[in-house]
Image (cartoon, rainbow, N blue to C red; front, side, top):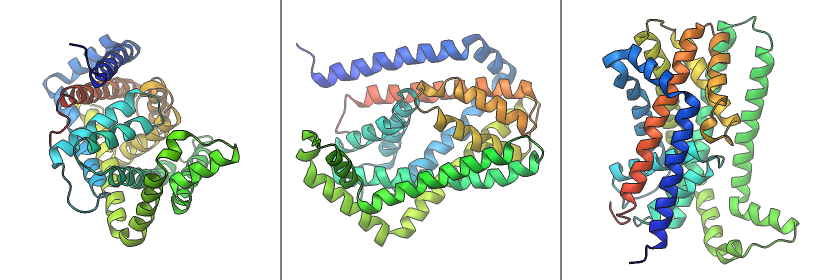
Length: 329
């Protein structure tokens, strides 16, 4: 029997994911990963707990961007988010590819396309705002930890300025209509993509739904932002935990600083698959500036990459397994 297009697509994505993982491990250094976990001994699985909790809290933040009753139960909803994040962490698509996949998987489970797309835009905005608030908090701590670090104030000013601009642009575009703005830009070049025109009515409805959400459900948006902010705080407990397990404890402010600004480094390297090299360089640079010993920075860089491999691999496996049952709740 001839395989369906969906099966071919799924197998192609799986093959691409496996190939990316192999490259991922090769660049990170498989032997270094094993050695770092060997140092942790039986406590190695404990390192996965903080990020596992982050996935739960972030799923709550995403769920708050939806209104009404969801036809998808929370466990399946959580798996879909996990799958989308796995794609975002491997495929360099400025985090758009994973969001589109989340929308697609939700529509396959009975969620209205407008509802899913609206929630994707709103939740990504809430997540971006939460990250900016987290960076602001960490920046004040960074200036106390390393007040004499050359160029630190200027660097923080650039990061905060860029973050404020990004959030401002997000809200400005949404106030004008996301897809309406896209049509306006394409119109400047006298270009009218057929796929855009064919979906014009649905996209305009999505724009109206986004505007109505901000107007009538502000508390829900702020609750979503708070959930994502809690996720960033939880994420910072990872290096705090690792440092203690390796016998090189760091302070809570140091942990917050490293997590916040490594996140900035990852955004800067979002076009690089998995931010390979960018993330590791960020951990070393930021960690040393914040007063962390270099051996700890190196060990954490390896362990963080190993943790990402575990979560990304799990996400791709969930995608492949779940793809066989598109109507499962």
